[in-house]
Length: 129
Image (tube, one colour):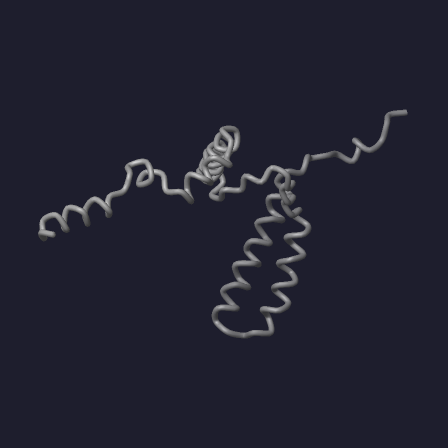
């Protein structure tokens, strides 16, 4: 056989159908197993995650887990007090800075709490006779 015919036969055997090139067997089998509703739900979850990322800075879309409640002011004051007890013993520059920041934060929490109090008079607690 001539080299040209051999080359042509080799080219014919190396050809691939466009369908198998665009949809490889492994990938097309996966697509058949996924329903349109599952694809729709995946797209909606992605959009919701993107919106959550813009609003809250994280993409939590698991609606089955209830959100962890925010700690109360009393819990935060207790936590800062506990951290301050530990920091006082360290005696290094970073600890001193953190101690000052926690004390300032603690003061701010107490200030905000007192700012929201309602002014009352002693006579508010007694009913007229």
